[in-house]
Amino acid sequence: MTQENGSKQKEPLVSVRNLKKHFPIYRGVFRRQVGAVRAVDGVTFDIYKGETLGLVGESGCGKSTTGRTILQLLEPTDGEVIFQNRDLTNLSRNEMRRTRRDMQMIFQDPYASLNPRLTVGGIVAEPLEVHNIGTPRERRERVQELLQLVGLNAYFVKRYPHEFSGGQRQRIGVARALATNPSFIVADEPISALDVSIQAQVVNLLDDLKSELDLTYLFIAHDLSMVRYISDRVAVMYLGKIVEMSDRDEVYDHPLHPYTQALLSAIPIPDPVKEKQRQRIILEGGVPSPSNPPSGCRFHPRCQYMTEICTEVDPDFRNLGTESRPHWVACHHGEKFL
Image (cartoon, rainbow, N blue to C red; front, side, top):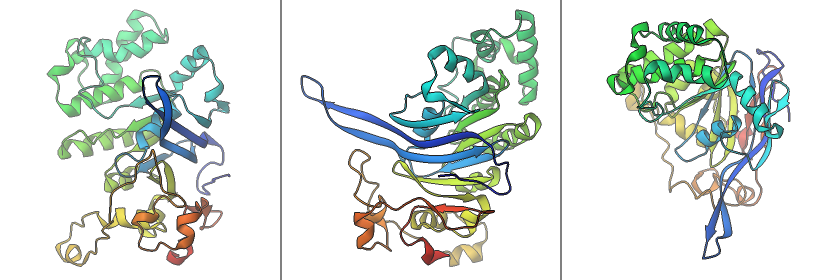
């Protein structure tokens, strides 16, 4: 399945094909496997050079696991991750280590992702030391340059993480991710642990760095309005599968999957008149267990448009848009919303 975006370059920087990550469940004295948590269960998409792909969905749907599996921080159960025309799942440890210079991650929690025993200079310089980049003097200069790039003072190098606010710590995390000049960054909910007043600053920083350094992002988040602001394309994930993907405006203005419609109906509108007229789509029941997903369409127990075919057949991920502006959706009744 080829997913091309007519407005973008045809050659993807990252291609994910049928990616799966299952966590085994063991029980008993002999630790027999009795099942598996299907955190990611057959995900396919492309990320084009210079774009930001937003990945959204409820907690526990597999967004963060997808990001970590793409970077091979978690070993995939099945599937391919092709980066710069190389399948990362087949690389040796040494080859993967060298490849990580070009792909980095910004972690969710700025409080937990920084080593409290290291100074800021040591934290930002660590990737340079691991990959043996530059002399000690060149590393010090590079660290100061990176701190200034993310809006921090160069003399912060001798301070420790506990001396900074949440927003400043996340900027340190961004500087660390940029140390090796990567071309691809997975931003795993980089703003969810921050105060609302700081979130916009960090998102604007990431957007500016994207233009300045020609970066490509996989931006994982809960905040739908923030995803619309920073992303070029948006993918919606539910229970280990991507259920809808298209251009940002297409997904937000013309959602074709009932789950996407329900998510978007929850976004508050900053207009008292329109807010009163907004109709929420309330989903009944909770998210099914990923260790025992429903048969057929995984969303059918909570879907108001559910029919018999939804309970029996898993819908194909198909393009209901045009070749120049594709709109991918996994729903038997997607045409109903065109």
